[in-house]
Length: 231
Image (cartoon, rainbow, N blue to C red; front, side, top):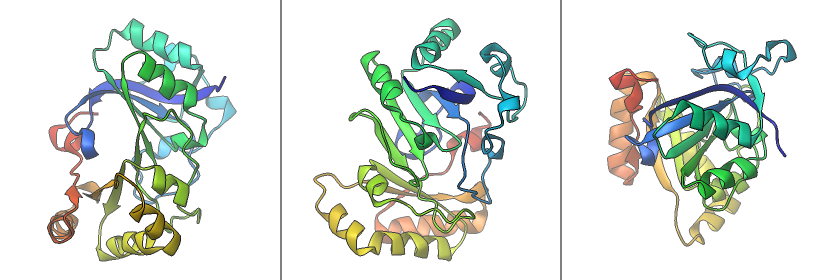
């Protein structure tokens, strides 16, 4: 049984990608070595044993910090039941959730009638139940130098790429043109949806994203939760 390190759990509205507008329970896991400079959850990067606390203490945090708790799948669903949350969609995010084997958690969620989604950088193998919706936000040329895995891109139901400037679109193009990936993607029965997401609601990035989506027939993700002021 996989023990998960959990930084946050909360109920909100999914603000990105295909499930935008969907009520969702977010499970944010601790740990991420990728090093994205614009990351808005840097408090999840390090796994420091001295920051472990009881789940009830962590879940009462009034502000983001690097405290986390350890839990099994059954313990997480006990928390969800005790909170009496109504959402029927679960988002597993981080940090980098695919540092963990997510098979138990995703299959349990599906068995309990939830839809379930993983948000990953694509730098780890995606290990989960077959019916899991996988969002790969490929982190290309980040500080840690970790490659985006072909296996993760092939598992993706959607590819959601944050951009600030043209070079970020060029990097995605290069990734998609990779000979092995391009050939394997073209043979998939169902192609992944491609979303472009402006970083931090920057006006220039938003305009570039809109223009690119129209030109490529891709989709726009605008981080709805930030516009309406929810977590």
